[in-house]
Image (cartoon, rainbow, N blue to C red; front, top):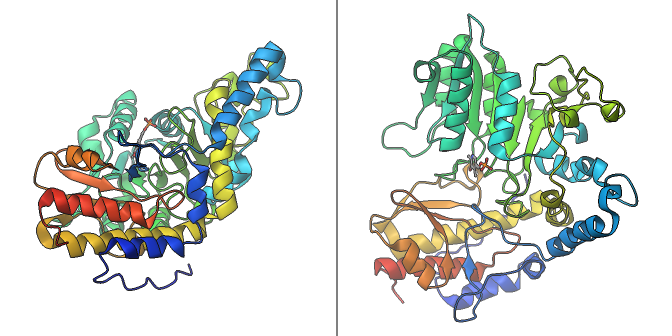
Length: 431
Ligand SMILES: *Cc1c(COP(=O)(O)O)cnc(C)c1O
């Protein structure tokens, strides 16, 4: 990827420099396309929490109101009649979604929520045999993913503890190295059925080299599943090309589709075309040509849509289109360029203003992280202190502060306010 060299941020901790950076930011107009929450003083918050819930694109309200109007005016006819009937609303956003994750149109589907989709994928792709029954996962792992993996092991009568190979960072390090995953697969790959890792780690912000992970997994003959909750809309992805078997994600973090937005799912075409794969059946995964014939036998469509179960959550789906539209306009590569600069600036400010009084869990190299920086701050009360300064971030227990500037709507000035507030909390601000 073509990333311009970062300007030298060194020594530039003054507010005016943040304003200068904003003035030359070619994506700055996109901030106006979002609603920005304001604090009690009426001032816009420095919202660095897009890793948890992305802000609301202005266009989402219109999209939801359109569906409400359709319902009010058409009733049941809304499913089939007029423009954009609900019947095929699962087809609407697939081109844009495919582009965002580097998948083909028929390899992606928006449905359910992340963990539900993970269950559906494990039901299909975790197929233990006498030779291979282990599941390899990375640590730290989001609890929901752990619960999902453990429940599928139990469902098949396997004790989850000994059957889960949990790869942790080396002592004294905060994120897992690709070579440690490769070594584990070389050593034990023959007994591993499935590998499940995060694209970008929720706690540390570390971005795996997924091409390398996919290559190592394929060589070991294992199935590769990815949790892309913190990767989608954050870093460029090429799921089809890398040959990833399946992936799941949500759209309410960096994609900005709102709370309750449907999750995402990718099934590589070498699997999605195979209608004989075992799966959790439901009428919406059935071939739409015969769906309403109510045949006794489930005939899945040869497509990622074949993993759908229930009729789509139309109202929740409505906000996905306008959210994806922004990514279509900008393109993930351009966003990533700005993201690298924003996060580089945040890192540099933290280094200047708080120095070694915080521990950085996130890798220093831009290519090994997304937009989030995770810092360990030993003193309690940081979230509250930052909130008082009008800075929104979150803390993952016990003491990891996650600061995530999102390039679609965050400014360099937001980043400056965030770093400044951390410095003031720690009493280390020099100005
Ligand atoms: C946010 C997140 C989830 C959320 O799961 P839902 O089912 O959408 O509630 C799951 N896994 C990871 C790694 C996450 O970051």
